[in-house]
Image (tube, rainbow, N blue to C red; front, top):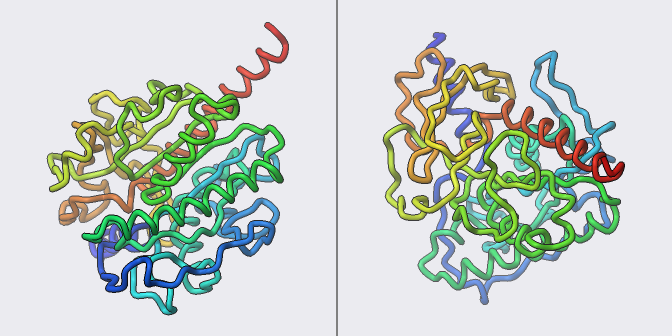
Length: 351
């Protein structure tokens, strides 16, 4: 019975976080498909998470040491969730999600917002816009132009939401950029357009562009992290079973792979004892869940440290990119923010 529960725990990680496998093909071309109405970010309903309203981003695992610190947070995180729009639509909009789709928004709250975005609420106020995310098929369609147009529309929303955030909420506060999968596709563009070599870079605590293969040389002025307390840097990783290489491995060969137990891109092995804990079934804490080691642009992990873990055959752990390292991410954001605030204080005092 315990073994069965443990395996079920792992399957829950797979089911409740992000990016389902391809399971629906769109037959209509992008230009022939209606476009859902744009969100209005002046309205709270257009935001999946705001500090001023109750949402899943306010949650924390049932662990006495973990608190929602948004009320006193000295920084903000602008978080973009991954692809949740994966099935056959319930309306006429196929290529891009309708932000007024209540059922889809509820799924976004109980999956990506709960299991991923909450890892930042210890020291950051959380801002997450609903956006007209591209359907998962956009990444697989043989007609690349259709997929590109769907993704471009999604980015328009992310960009508009970020500009609204800057104008109405930021007020010069330190900024963390965080994302997963499709979200990282958009945040990669956001960093290039608004931070890399721009004035806003001085407010960047760190960027966590998780679950997307991004070349380590992608940014000219924002460096990959080399240590846990660096500021103004970026991190990224894609999680797979040890010794496994995906069919599209060439995409990852030049990608940055940050070990979230060490916060560098070396191939040094990090044992599970360095893992401060992940989240799984019913948003519960699971200690020392996995180890981690970089290899050729991939983050390799051994089978999860649970009863019955040896029975798990999963090779692609994309959906657990954040779940596996939840507490390490949480600690690291706090560590980098402390360093950022100390640096700012030094600059302000001239010491």
